[in-house]
Length: 336
Image 1 (cartoon, rainbow, N blue to C red):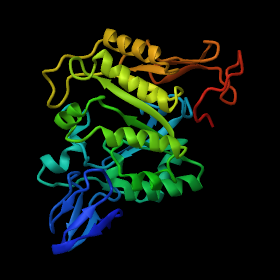
Image 2 (image 1 turned 120 degrees about the vertical axis):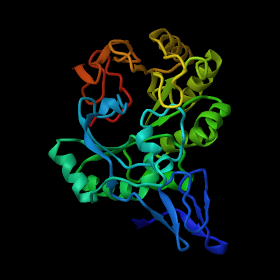
Image 3 (image 1 turned 90 degrees about the vertical axis):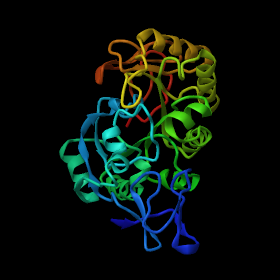
């Protein structure tokens, strides 16, 4: 347990958390929506500092990040808790644990030094804060990230993008890459499925980009809920207006958690979304949760296949200093 950052004290011993856009007003003895930040006698504390429930090496492509040190391993860690309550969460056993288990907090205590050392032992070139929303264990991610940079290890958030503007500014000082879920391009979906709002997510995509953090976007395609062509066109256009070089990962929904009655997405659903993205002007669109399609990086200048993938494995990487070997076009990304 450690005192939290990004909060202020209010009347009647209440505290206002400013870490994310929920801006929870928390009474003594109560917690914020994330289930892991609690008002203890008028001070806000993090209940999950160092309380890790996951830690291991994964291909960085699994995050997914395709333009960030391709072919390398990323040491992935997580606590329990989340500031979203997504009805289709694939990691709900972790993200909703404090809420669904009567406030329980689990995990094996580790220090930032131990996390960074583990990343080194596994020959990882980055640490990914993932599986649940990493913002909710911000203090620990910051301490790990600062130490990781001393060891030339990069830092990644896999995020829902709902952190406050002040938090983004601080995160940009220690994050090298971020994959942000844009779950849908309509506020109704966010309210009904995630118990959140869309606009803060869009604002933070732009903000991270402007602050120089490498950004990739993921959208899980759920048939009948977020796959209308007009909505996908709005989403793709939003990305293009920031930078057409930002990669967009479109992944296939599988029935999960409280959305077991929804049909799975097929490769045809993804192909339709991919075509919408191309027409909008995006240069790099990838398919996820399907194998053997939509995984290759092509040069936007000449169309050469510069990074070929099969699942999470790099089959062929022709990039040299981030450039196409055929026409010397610079491919946007973090390549070293």
